[in-house]
Image (cartoon, rainbow over all chains, first blue to last red; front, side, top):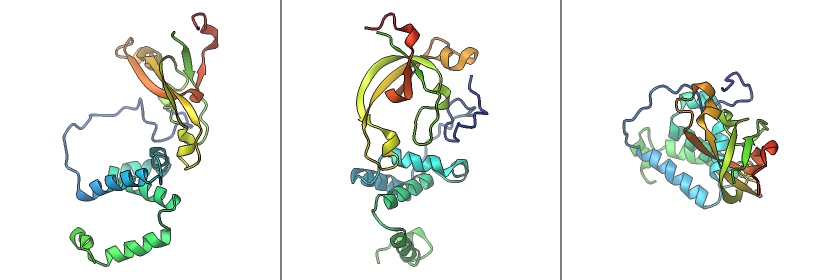
Length: 115
Length: 95
């Protein structure tokens, strides 16, 4: 049997844990979630990262991120960190762009408007 | 050929993808899948050497012990060769 007190076992290594009921309901994805998926595919195709690079960031986030963030929130954080590490943009450029987008307005519709 | 292997229990830092529930467990090599870049290097954006990937078959009873619901069911896991060690005392039927 598995020793669950194994301190070398990291939080994401969940195989064998009691899982509870499995939700089987279907759900739609929000537009931003689809865009995260698209960005992941583009970044990978351009060679900025591999799935292993994304997984490494997800695993390093720790258990709190798994409890507090949604699936695509964790994915965009992992994609973003890999794009910065891969040299796609700098943190300063990201900050500038985020400020520009948030200045467009408070809603998703406002932010999506071309400037 | 039913070469038996044991999943290394060693847990080095970094992106070693063997799950805890298979560490130290013994299975048989179901097939070789070819060589692929080492995920331990890819995870950090480093140049990666090719490593052999194997599909290893485990019996449920060998993973879960008496808790296995169907002891003779099997589980396949794809594991890089360097995360495994051969079972040397059982090579009578090796080629």
